[in-house]
Image (cartoon, rainbow, N blue to C red; front, side, top):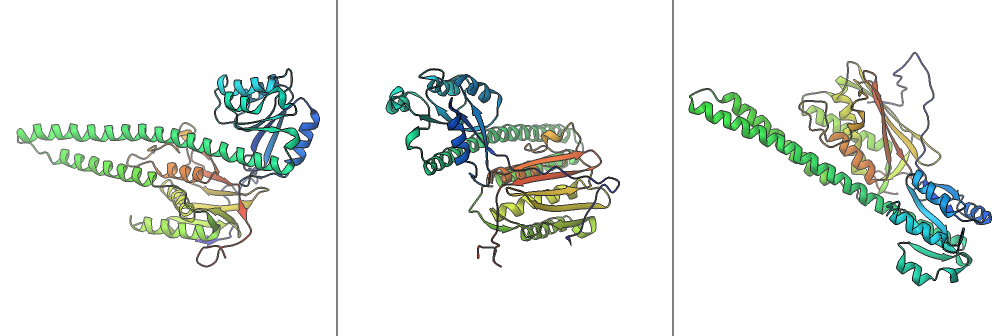
Length: 395
């Protein structure tokens, strides 16, 4: 493996790639007093949660807030004044968020300077809100705590919903794959029975049954492996060490297929001394899957570049190859379970990568052109200064 060498895939053109920062938490401030917006922004100016800063959005009326909520995705928290256009404008907004917009995820924090207009017990019992604060009691420290608690709740709800959707997608894909295999096995078994009774050769049919049974076994094994993926305890992981371990694992996997990794690919690594907080085992597995993907879809003179660069918040991790690339028609499906452009592929490699990324709360994207290779980018929000010791644990 070649370390710290530049790897250029397009010599004829130099360009500066766009730097992607981690997506920021969106907070909507709804209040008809400009001073409240200014003070809130001042207090939350340097706020971060899980390595992500805040994107503070302002609305000055209930009507404007609903329009913003309808047009803006993933608003995590609404800091909502009660009295605006009228004495109950904020309460109407809270009700419309849940009922009209059908949004159970956004955390609603009511802030009022006139508690008599909306008694706390009545509001909490009748509306699906998440906190109720009087403006006079909401100090900077309490606002920090309130927003942190709300963001943690929003994150957990979104994670649960994403996992539910992924589970539904996986279940449907498994059912489809198993149905195809069992129908094929049953069909060729019936043909074998008829030809056996007629005294004809049934070896081809039995071979097909054997192949389909093996594919079915591989499918079940891949689903079991996928289901067992869950993030364990986070630790400080030195990216260079994780890449080395992934290279060794990929080398071993290819050797079992009588392929020499060093003979089929040149790997260049430049990740500095960046350290992230993650489940070490899953990070290595993610990198192994991406390396295997690059090797499987390689062309002659296969080159793979692994790089990482610090961002203002976190770091940008990239794996770039000069392989066959991905056509625009299928690129949106590559992370789906059992999707593969290979006739004998199981199609769970990149699906596994996506799950590991989501387990950590990271972001992944791919850019590719057919015949021009692919680049996978992973935005990791949190980098840490301390490095692991020789055993890979915090010093």
